[in-house]
Length: 299
Image (tube, rainbow, N blue to C red; front, side, top):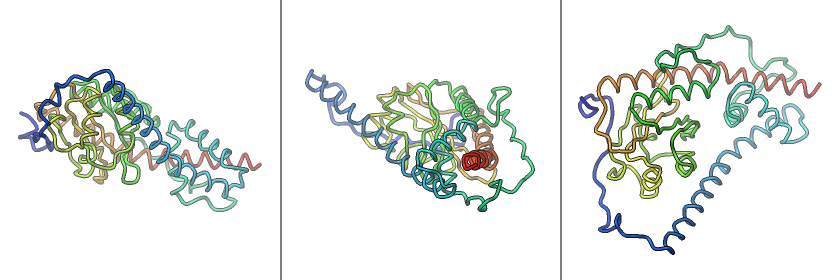
């Protein structure tokens, strides 16, 4: 049985009209050159968007640290965040967001947070990767992505984590740079955003005929070799969505069996519960480490 009867996945496969002759018209040399220039400009715009959307959060955190610890400049603050992120295997932008959002330590305090008993990591058996270092974000997210790709029988996919109201690309495999640059940040209008909002798996059986994409997004997806996709929200025990894993497929999808959808749901829950644990335990530890590094610099 497929997702159309399982009730575990939403589908999006309504036809979209194409102008007659659009797919078959050959491109002359001038048109090809212009198309290449347009593609390069789009790539540059995507890279600039990543910088524009990331830099303000990092700059805000730098300002907080300069004021809090009397650092000489923003470069010193950036260096502290980079050290803390590397030691904790956490992306620097995640440390920066946490610095800006988390109430700071008491003035003169040796620690940032009150001591608390350690909380064991949740089980990760559903990811099917054997022993994992639960503290290593890259390792766990990579295993979750591999598990989804194994269940859905493809070699293309990506992981996005929720940042404010945006999905931010964190891990990917088998996808073009144009794709990963274009979808570095997603605010809506894709299967992954619909899965996050609906708290439900979403299947796009045929990207080419789906009404769920604008023309530019559709072109980028198809150019990456993806003809269909399936998005799984990463949900914790309180039904909070922390991210999305999407599989991409070279051919249109028929659907998934009940067993596949159940396995994907198990992966969703295991990964979502782990992300919640990681943000409540490992991320504060990274902030505590940053605090110690800053105090040592003062001394």
